[in-house]
Length: 144
Figure 1 (cartoon, helix red, strand yellow):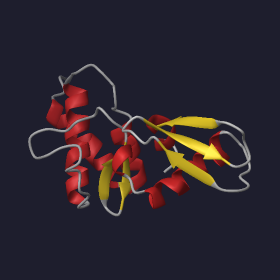
Figure 2 (cartoon, rainbow, N blue to C red):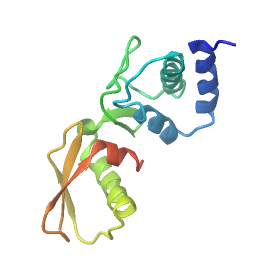
Figure 3 (cartoon, rainbow, N blue to C red):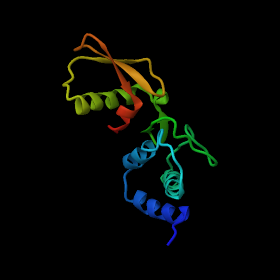
Figure 4 (cartoon, one colour):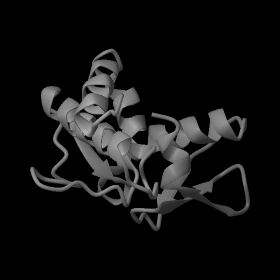
């Protein structure tokens, strides 16, 4: 039996209904720089958009009713998907701390400063290290 994009759409939509907002954002981020196209992917992307709409998550930073950009990783802040450069500093600090302690297994002591924020990365300066550490939006997106 041939499956059409609508068949995949309904399957993915059912799956997304059982997932948390953070899991839905991870599904979105899994498509960043993910080339290729086909019926399954078309259904997957349509289900992501519909799930965002059903949850009233504002995705206007990366799309509208006719298109969606998967160029940059996004972060859910107060009901809105934001590219890294649009995330307020007060929301970035906990993300960076979770990344450093969770991924790098480094205990934090002292302050951290964040600078040079773009859509793709930022620079972290830690009081406990004598150097600056670049952190990618991809790395941060794994620690919601």
